[in-house]
Amino acid sequence: MHPYILAEQTHAFIRSEQWEVAVLPFGATEPHNLHMPYGTDNYEVEEIGKRACERAYGAGAKVLLLPTMPFGVNTNHLEVPGGLALSVTPTTLLALISDIVDSLEAQGVRKLVLLNGHGGNELKPLTRELHHRTSVFLCVCDWFRMATDRYPGLFAKPGEHADEVETSLGLAFFPDLMKIELADDGAAQPSRFEAINRGWISITRPWHLVCKNTGLGDPAAATAEKGQRLMDILVERLSSFLVELSKAELDESFPY
Image (cartoon, rainbow, N blue to C red; front, side, top):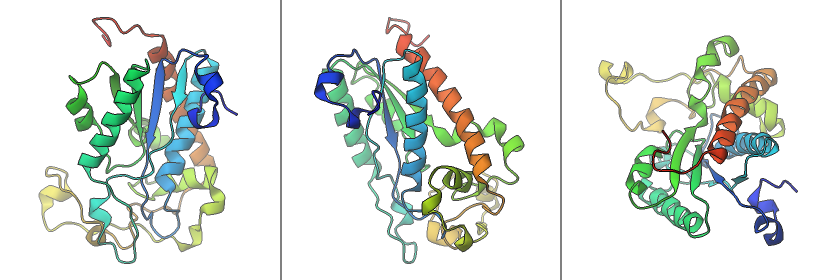
């Protein structure tokens, strides 16, 4: 039993502690090229959350990892041939977060980290929706943005989805679920609009048109060692923040 994982603990233990920070992981259930499991986003974000909370709790932070939300916003995956993405809408996601925030607030937990592992879960607008409706401090951590400054020294050619980065994490932390021999090259189909290709214009991409098998980025250079090195960076950065957040007083100038 891990003292920082809510799902593993008893009421006797939970009520004996004064919890300062809750961490709520968000994943998705969707295809990841042909070689990664549908639960990839959930496995990744939960592993990061467990390791970061373990380190933070060991350093004295009163931090608690909540169960992972396994369904994400996948409305643009639903036309992938033969796919079985399980999608909720942003409206549903907002309702779920609102209810959990209300639950935490009523029970005295007033700092919540939304730990996101799926690009379709755009959580920051939802925190803005709740900003004046709760006394709970809300912040968003998209793990896939946390260490991009270190990618040049880690990865040969990072992509976006089921790429060298995610495949490396899979090889390191859930290798039994990986079928690396099935992976395609993750090539992307460019848009007819140059402004979209260059990132000047943003769209909700139709995944059945943008790539062959939902992979964006070549996973060929992935290794378990790269996945472990990335995890070490992510855990160090997130756990340090959790320790600081746990100790910080919610005064009038918080978080400044």
